[in-house]
Amino acid sequence: MSHNVCVFAGQGAQVPGMGRDLADDAEIAALFSKAGEVLGFDLARLCFEGPAEELTKSNVCQPAIFTVSVAMYRALRKRFDGANFKMAGGLSLGEWTALHVAGVLDFESALKVLEARGRFMQEACEAQASGMVSVMGASEDQLKAICERAGVTVANINSDSQVVLSGTKESVAAAADAAGGLGVKAIILNVAGAFHSPLMASARDKLAEVLARIEFRTPEIPVLSNVSGRPHESDPAAIKEAMLRQVTETVRWSDCVKSALGYGAGRFVEFGPGKVLSGLIRRIDKGVATLNVQDKATVEQAASALKD
Image 1 (tube, rainbow, N blue to C red):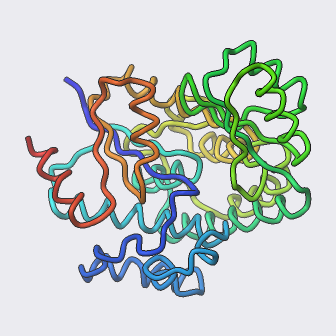
Image 2: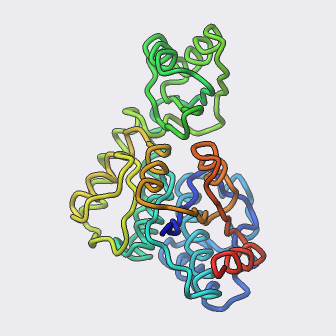
């Protein structure tokens, strides 16, 4: 029998207004208030009103998308308590949300980790000008040639047809040129730096100090690991190590989705602003069912679909 998998949005999905209509519910409003207390700034105001420039800062954006995604998850479970998920996953930052809903770390701990993770990643970006380039439709040999010529590394394998490369500003520009020379489409992304690459080593080292003080528990349901593309081990120390590796290593989203399908996933429910993951999932397998939860209306739609 096929089962449901919950998946959670990554950085870049943020938009002013996210989560606002769900906060009519007192329990959800309390969640945003709690997040603001833990973080020491008015997270609810930034999520609901912006400004976009402030919301885009990594140390704000990461805990903001996490809180909104958790709010959406809780709103659905409240609307339909039979919404059971057999597996969880997420893209980059979203993997932390998946770990939280699977009981690996509590809400406050996840907020503290993500504020620090965002801050450390931003500091690494500022230490060296770097970036990312999205490459579409390249063969494995073409990708290898682009990486070798330009000196970039693979940051995200989003689907068989879309891969994101990271490197210094110069090497990202060289990668786009190399792709063009091979007749492959490439788009330089508007991001702060070379995420999921060796250029984030300083962020990984600083995050290790933070995680040393955070309690991890055994997951209650399997959680897909970005680094391996398979479910995490049950050992909390191994999960912690994998989440540190995630800062500097390739995010294997395509493998995560294929792994979930191999375990019997029949439907993916995406929580968080936007529909990026649903789009990527359908590229990986056109036949798979996806649902989105991002506001009151989609909570109702998802609850109805999951009841059927």
